[in-house]
Length: 175
Image (cartoon, rainbow, N blue to C red):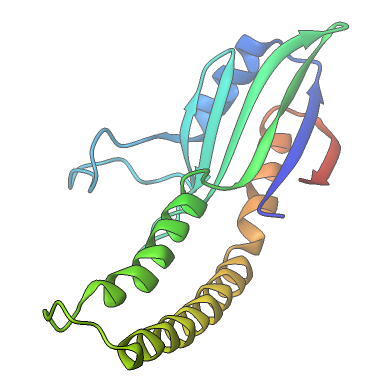
């Protein structure tokens, strides 16, 4: 759902593919934020070797979220580029940890008294359920908004790679 498998075939060798891709992209900045004199003339940033590719679309004013990660291998006289395109693999983990903190942190605060009454337990449980429900709804809305805002980035990266290596997109299935 958040990542799609890709498979692109081309007559070029992996070395030629890497050379074409490297010529068509800006390399990733060594630090974040990038230095003021950082090259930024091309719409895609990343890195390419004869074995691996990592690309992301340059988006002015915000961080790219969709990445294309693929491997290149020679198979039956042609190069097969296979991998995944979609959100960065760390993004769901960060979202999960953030959502858990949004639920857990407010419940850790207490009155500081050692004696806890039944009413405190009931009110605390009710607070956790309500706050947790609101947090889940907010996280769901954020995920839907994210998918809507970045829906064209994955297609853009796949089309960019296909054009750059004169390849054919032979598979594009959802995971």
